[in-house]
Length: 578
Image 1 (cartoon, helix red, strand yellow):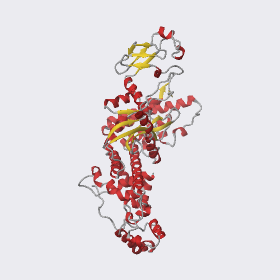
Image 2: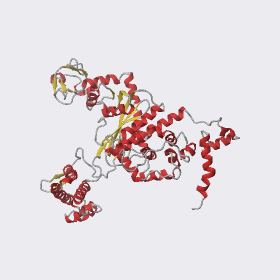
Image 3: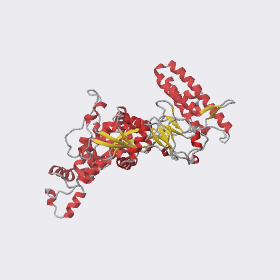
Image 4: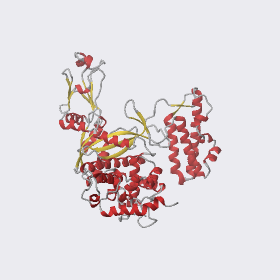
């Protein structure tokens, strides 16, 4: 059953005593002042039973701790410790000095509930709502910029030998669990004990410079794997209640064998040359993939895609893609998410060249959305590129740089485009032939199914509005930089769902940091010289020292609390014998 925080303030809560000492302009101080509006218990009622069970830790308190954990980039253990001794956390959470609000297991379970019930987007929306309440963003029509950045996976990336060994070990553990036997005992009985050692390759007594010995070891591993798959099939029929779990682990091992191993013509197995498309690279995190940010930069893990409001720089959309996915994947989903989170209409979407492909433009055009992105350029070596030709789709003709035109068009289908062809005789007699084509046949110009949309995009990008949007796209880089500083470059968890929640929490912190900065610039804190306590102080130096040490209160009640604590309670807490 859901626990709730009391609306009544406590006399010795840290935010009443130390708020000015920690600083109202800090994120800790902002959370202390606005946590009741930002995180409310009733917003998380879906996570709990309504009328049964022991009351839980108030969810508003638990989510505030997760927020501070993302801000400071600490582990669950360190987060619990900071709720005990860190004065900034005490102030932000409204705790008393000796209060221990939650245990590590309860905090981990609460985060698991948030991930399971897909509450990440709701948390992101809360940060945008707070920005509206603070006056940081007001418009109901926004422009968003999209981009991606690599996020390294948590799972161990191994070579083929150890990858197959991990797959065998995982399936063997599953079958031992179904059989009700210890893992080591079951493995020894089936002759698979070497996969439960410290390192398969380290314990293999072979010469690793000898390819024949390497292939022999690989063949033995594959044979053990296939024998284990037969045992799994038998266990699946004998224990149908565990059939789904066994099938999942068996399919994983079967995929590992298929993607990396091939049969040798003379018998035995060898490692395939090259890299399999969509290769699975980690047993511990099967959703990780080999990724490439550029021609020279590779990574192992996922891609984080974000949508940023170009005016306020608030992050309003987050998705986690496979590492080998294209940047433009789920671009339209990000726009839809941005509209749900901000409760505003996206008037324009801006991206880099990766978002300028034909299929992406077609998807945006189908919803009558404006997409501003550079059109991918085609290269033809030292010869004239496609952009040097004037393509008239209304008249269905193409004019070459030499002034020759053609209407000969060969269609590849409605959804496959086609190509324009110049006659061989025309190209052979052309004075610019050496700059246009290397072969003996005539020049051809390929036409995409979305060629008309690409022409419209090129024309829009040349306008003042288009060029301005492309320049302003850099704000998404600033948003990604903030997320990277908050630790999203390395995933803390296995799987895309948990990684997405990590990125969303970082986005909430980044958004509220912008709001705090806005509020501080708009209304800088100043000493209230008309306050009775301030008037009683004799010199400006006294005023300054008092404010710096946290003794200046906003009203008489908090000042009395402060004096009572320091002169009546604190001496006994500090000097009383243990």
